[in-house]
Image (cartoon, rainbow, N blue to C red):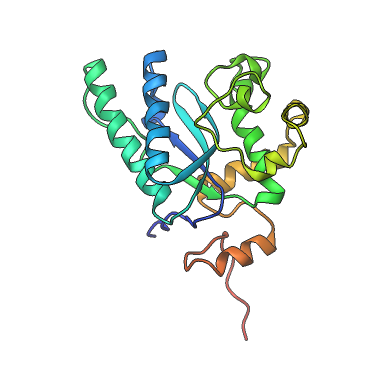
Length: 228
């Protein structure tokens, strides 16, 4: 069975995951981390892709992006992947692949799942047992969203702006949202949609999205179609 093309539609938020091959580390030290994120922001800008949230773990990274063109995210990720592997291999005296095949991605229903997806991304270090609070982890967008630092590379999504009329109100509201955590079912849906490339949203979102693309956006129903 041939794999489906990636689902990418301009103007929609995309949750992207890229993993190291066989879950091997993709960064060794902070110099690698700085290099990788610099490439992410450089090629996002070059391809007119807004970056709303991110986290960099030792063997994978997550991004929440909105492209202005259908080619924006694929071109950005291809450029980042090629440039970073070349520099990583040169720096560490290695050869061969670094990535676990193609990146994974899904389109996110803004009203229902965007904030949950942001929180899921920024809570990765907590789920991995690296920190007890996402504020303690330096390599994510969380500190920006709660007002601890300013990251000029980030483009806050309108849903985030709607959390409050002032920066303090937005930051406090988002901090409380993340602190409350996500329901297990929310996490499961985010992971399943992203790893399999299905739309992350309700039925109406899937129907509206299907009108914008020829590519199937939800998992096919199991079993044979009913006899007519």
